[in-house]
Image (cartoon, rainbow, N blue to C red):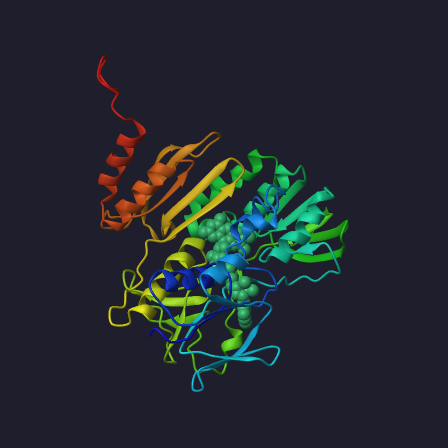
Amino acid sequence: MSGRTVLLVGASVAGVRAARALRAQGHAGRIVLAGAEPHLPYDKPPLSKQFLAGDWDTERLLLLTEQEARDLDIELRLGSRAVELDPTGHLVRFEDGAECGYDVCVVATGAAARPSPWQVDSGLHLVRSLADADALRSDLARGGHVVVIGAGFIGAETASTARALGCEVTVVDPSLAPMERVLGAELGKLFVSLHERHGVRTRVGRAVRSVTGAAGSLAVTLDDGEILRACTVVVGIGAVPNDDWLAGSGLRLADGVLCDEYGRAVGAEGVFAAGDVARWFHPGHQEHLRVEHWTNAVDQAATVAHTIVHPEEPRPYAPVEYVWSDQYDWKIQIVGRPATATQHTVIGMFDENARAVALFGDEAGRLTAAVTVNWPRVLLECRRLVAGGSTLDAAKRRVDALAHPPVPAPGAAS
Ligand SMILES: Cc1cc2nc3c(=O)[nH]c(=O)nc-3n(C[C@H](O)[C@H](O)[C@H](O)COP(=O)(O)OP(=O)(O)OC[C@H]3O[C@@H](n4cnc5c(N)ncnc54)[C@H](O)[C@@H]3O)c2cc1C
């Protein structure tokens, strides 16, 4: 494999981590990292948090500097949008007419914000790219009322940051418990009260009928006729995989690039996928999954790189899901898939100055997931327990012990 060319399409966390892992694992051939955006590869989680708040500058977002790329002998092709993959010719074609041959291609084109169904000339924002966050940051700096449509992770984090910047904020979501899909209904409702405690107005169970006007004087009309006047509107209604450029390539596309458990794309030799764009077969869950979380992109990229460098010993990718979110004073961390659980138990209080965990189990009493607030130590332990197949009862005892460590006897050595 040493003299072979690996072409990574998509220069964000999955592409960069795969490139780095290829070198770390001994790939000595050519590595080309192509990305549609003109910027050096940057990280996305801070775009709705520290970057949007103005606490971090662009430099701090970088995933790879030019110097690091030179040191690792990674060829950067920035501003190069791939428009076609030809698996017979082992070629990728770019928008500007250029081509790049490959022996192995890793599709790491991620996802895009689901487009807004409402169009206005200005003042309406999506939050996915650096350019998006930059534009929103300028509008938030003007203050005024911000309406956030969609209370999933991106909407909730944007609302939290806008509030911290002193904006008035209203969050609208058609679901009564917007995070229900991820957290289940009961815990989902706690997140609505989290916003309200921080002075955000909520309109849950309400849909948006139209958005009209322009920056500074927008009007968001709800399905019951209420009109919310806003200076800025943020639309956070999910993401869609960037797989349309692969139409006609022979790869199987099914809301993402369909892959086997090793990340090998179905339908073409020598093509892998990693990160938000990959829908791979999870051997643990026995189903195909597409996950839009940072840690998944990192871990999947490393696993795919391993399989490329060591094809004779491919590693199946079967992670315990993990995602974090920062909202107001809550650091929320989730392992496993809470929404698929049939029972749960809570330790601590999901309240102000919270430190709490909800443990989730299946019908057999097995621990399948956990959600913690401001309790990273317990989260780490839960991740280990989920991976190890712990029962819900054993996990509860373990977390209780961590919450109430035995008081040392007087005079005992500390
Ligand atoms: C605002 C925001 C906050 C987030 N916060 C969190 C968080 O707190 N916790 C968490 O776990 N996850 C978070 N995420 C999700 C996390 O950032 C993603 O899971 C991660 O970025 C996925 O990485 P990726 O490399 O697979 O795809 P992406 O980050 O989507 O990158 C794909 C790259 O491919 C490029 N590209 C697309 N099409 C083409 C093409 N045809 N040719 C060439 N290049 C192309 C794009 O320009 C992009 O740079 C957040 C995401 C956003 C947007």
